[in-house]
Image 1 (cartoon, rainbow, N blue to C red):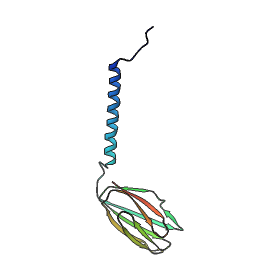
Image 2: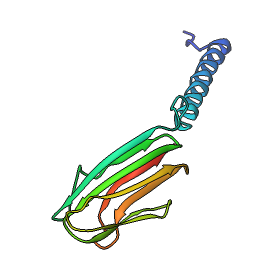
Image 3: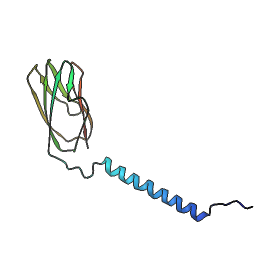
Image 4: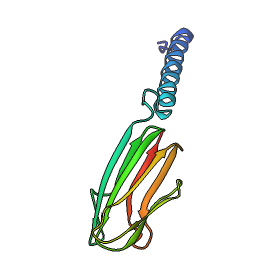
Length: 128
């Protein structure tokens, strides 16, 4: 008895369908990683407290659009220095006194915001 084989046109249709799906997914990833649809500018205010080497709110990622003004207020219970890597912005942290730091996130990428002496990562800033 002859065995059933797939015809060449069926195989071509399936390959074409897979190619269309792969291209559509690649286009979606391209636009998603470019930050399409994310408006530039605006302000993002962040208030952080450091107590007994504990960061509050807990360390995480903060995502903003390129051109956003970042306004940081950090209060620490110990003297230290606040530092925004990649932007080379710094502020002195004096116990119990809120330190304020403001800058425009005009460079894209991933940047750590941390304290120098204690080596605490406050958050990672993602700019798209």
